[in-house]
Each structure stands twice: as C-alpha cells, then as structure tokens.
Length: 438
Ligand SMILES: Cc1cc2nc3c(=O)[nH]c(=O)nc-3n(C[C@H](O)[C@H](O)[C@H](O)COP(=O)(O)O)c2cc1C
Ligand code: SF4
Ligand code: SF4
Image (tube, rainbow, N blue to C red; front, top):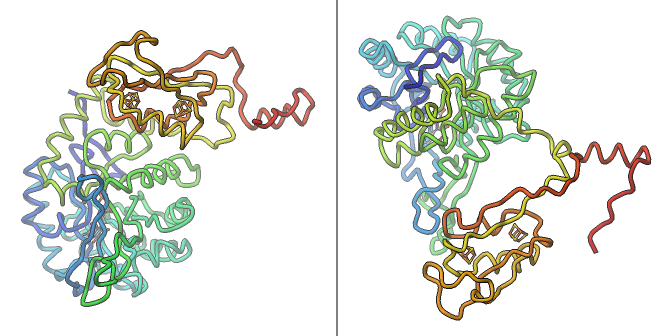
C-alpha cells in the first residue's frame, strides 16, 4: 500500500482527493457524506455576501450518448449566510480532525477580506482558497474572474489577505486568460502559499433553436456560464504544467478540471499537482467515486514502484517542452493488428480524406490475414503504406477497436535534431535546408 497522504503548503490530508468548491461542498451534511465516502478534503462552497440565484442554472454537452461531457453553470457563490457556513465548517472540522477543510472566500473590500480570514481561522479551517475564478455574475460585480484576469488586482488583494492570514492561502485561478503564469506569478509575488486551477471556462453550450435562446434558459434570456467536466481536462492539464514548470511561480498546486477517476488524478499529479479537486464527476455520480479513485491510485503507485503519491508529483513536468526542442528525426508509424481488425475501414477514410493517403485497401487473402473478427468475406482490409505514413496518430485515434492500431517506433538511423539544432546547422552552413514536400 503506497502512502497517499499529502501536505499542500501546510494543509494535510490523508489522500490527495478534495471536493472542489461547488454545490457538493455547500453544507455540513454534504461534507459529512463526502468524508464518510473517503474524501481527504473539502473546499467549501465559496462564502461571501449571500447571493440570489436564477432558475435554471446548468446546461451540458452530450457526445454520442455520453452525458455531461461538458457542464456549464451560471450559478453564483453561496446563498447561505457567512455565519451559517463558518458554524458548519467548525462542526465538520471538529468531527473530522484528520481531513482538510478549506474555506473558499470571495469579497471585495480590504476590511471584509480581513474579517473573512479571521472567521475562517476561528472556525478551524485548515486553509482558505480565494475564488478569483467565476466567469459569470460575480465578475460583473468586480469579483471572481474580474480579479483573476488582472495580475495587478490579484497582487493587491492577495496582499490584503496575507496581512490577516493565520492559515495557508490558496489562490484559485481562472483559465479565462491568455497566459496563466501571469496571475500565478502575481499570487506568488503577493505571498500566497499555493495556487489552485482551473476554475470554469467561459462558455455558451447550446442554443435552443425554437426559443432562439441559449441554455440555461432564464425567462427569455441566458448568459455565458462556466464550463467544466471531462471536456476541460486538457486545458487544465496544460495550465497546471505551465505553472509547475515556470521558475517564477514555484508554488504548490491543487489541480482541478475534469477529474473523474484515479488516472485523471494521477495525470494531474504527474504534471505537478499536490492535491486534486473534483466537482462535475461528483455532481454526476456522487461522493462514492472516491472509493475507486483511492484504490486505483494505490494500485497504480504500487505497480509503478512509487512508495508514496508524493514520489509521483511532477514526474512528467519536464517532458513538456517548447515545440522547437522536439526531435524532427524521430519517426513512428501505424501498425495494424489483423487479429483485432473488424474491417470497418474508418482508418482508411480518415487517412485518405483527412490525413496523408497512407493507407491502402487490399484483398485480405492476398495479405494472408484471412477473415478476422466480424470481417465480411470479400471485403478489403486496410494496409499501412509505411513510406507514406507520417505517424500523425489519426488512424489509431479513430479506430473503434482497442489497441487494434498501435503506433510503433521506426529506427531510421538518423541522429536527434530539433528545430533549434536545424536552424543553427543551416545558419552555420553545416546542412542544406530540408526541401519542401512536392
Ligand atoms: C454548479 C457549479 C458551481 C460552482 N461554484 C463554485 C464556487 O462557488 N466557487 C468556486 O471556486 N468554484 C466553483 N465552481 C467551479 C469548480 O469548483 C471547479 O473549479 C470546476 O467545476 C472544474 O472542476 P470539474 O471539472 O471537476 O467540475 C463551480 C462549478 C459548478 C459546476
Ligand atoms: S479502423 Fe481499425 S478496425 Fe476499422 S478497419 Fe481500420 S484497423 Fe480495422
Ligand atoms: S498515422 Fe496518420 S499518416 Fe499514418 S496511416 Fe495513420 S492516419 Fe495515415
């Protein structure tokens, strides 16, 4: 059994799995349920001046029958009073002393930030998370992403917060910005102890063409909301990696965005996260998903020979580099396993119309592969034209059969040469420019 316990800037939890600040972390009742299921921490639904919400509030994207691949919401922060929230945080912390409880905060004035910081510490919270991320509603009032999009304002507000900070401060960043390291660096300059990312991506998910109005529909109008769930995971992973690798950020990271299982979590940790937070997957499947997450992460760490989850942290960060450092001479090509191929020829169409015309259709008898699983007599099978294949991966991505098309390395005898090396060699006259394809 690997050690799953973590310590993020002084906030300890028995495992890296935290409930993100959102509807699942709205009440003490839910916090108890989350901890009973095994979550290591809960980031409370953002506390601030209680708001009034609209009805309806969510919309989503389904893809080929898979529901809620992306979830959009126009919900605001908590609609409950700070007194109620802090009282319930205290009650939860007393009952679950070994778990992490983080108070998520959003307010505007310096005095108010000081007041919430004191109330958070008095309630026994292990830390606070500053919500500079909501891309709807609160930003119109000068909070949420209106702060997260302006590094100078972040620096000022985090500065105020740090004046009153008795417990660790995590700054939650918005992805609705060109370069995530600017706000991350501003948080660092102002003395924050950690960052968390991402909050939701500004979005309109769908337009109801009968009513000529997007969802979520509110009495004839809608508003852009915050997008989350599996669809945003690639954006979140990239931003986490950027922060983890930037020398001027240098803060512990709580990774958030589309995490639904142990593998998603392990990927965020390999790219530099200490803890991971989950919202949409809990809204979809409930708190008990954490049981599989804990078991799966444990099994993976054991299999991979990591004694602790901390040994995995950041292991993949340095492999993500600028394009110019990639080896132009590395070559891989597609390879088909005919024992698995069902003869659907999706790979052929994809390569022929959408890639590099590197797949031929051939007679299976001629190829000596006979009838495979589900292949009909007389139907051709795909064959990779190895010389034409540029190794783009497309056919392996569209093939519906698991591991039927794999990508294999080809030894072409060439030495490693990056775009930077190439530029240098050409400039020095050590090689001729590579001619363009005809
Ligand atoms: C309905 C809803 C309400 C949310 N409310 C908050 C909030 O009050 N404070 C906050 O920091 N983030 C809030 N979030 C954002 C989540 O904490 C999280 O950053 C985001 O959903 C990405 O994680 P996920 O892909 O696991 O959902 C909310 C998300 C949803 C879907
Ligand atoms: S997509 Fe896969 S299963 Fe379909 S023909 Fe190509 S290799 Fe075979
Ligand atoms: S890897 Fe790309 S180029 Fe090669 S066969 Fe597949 S789709 Fe065609």
